[in-house]
Length: 279
Image (cartoon, helix red, strand yellow):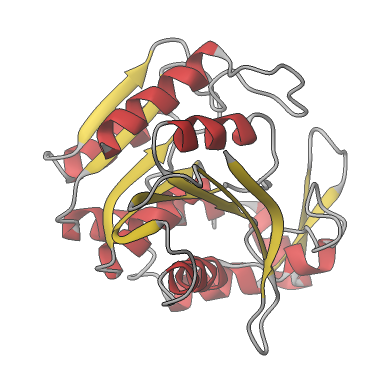
């Protein structure tokens, strides 16, 4: 298996994107899987590398990347050394980043092993909403899967709370990272970007527009994104495939760091179901 880590996608005037690729270098015409992490996530979190290896062994070219403003850097792609970049992130930038990655892999001389007519995307948690919006807009995407994906961005702003009012007044708010204990900053532009593009970033609209195969995968014990959100996604596209993993949590049994050399049972199940769906 060919594994290349911390490759850098540069575009003039944009923050660089760091990505990894996994594939069988003896194979050809490999379908492509692009994996998008969620909020406070990164490409090297937990057991994502074992997910990548499983897809590569199953005959896919697998690419996972850090969103350009996720708080990581080129030299330190794990965790959040650049909180200023994190504070500048928004949904528009994440859509642009995913478009940049898709443009990269469809460049004529990118990798002769891949089949650019078979581009599939997976999004975890907030990344689930990101990939659904992108799939509704980008005809290059042929299948889409969400893992513990959100169904609504707008409801998470909680505009009627004192915390929101203070955010609007001061221009910045902080969310504690439970693992690193960092105070993660959000500038108010995160909200104004959403409001300026609210129709585009309404996930229900995107799902209603989908005409490609859609997999919705969710754990029944997800403590972060309620199961009702998976059911809403399925209701909006009754042709979608809903797979529930009994008693699985938001990260399908994984944690960070992940020191074992095999996937936790629930994440292995999620990976297997998604491989079967993409095949």
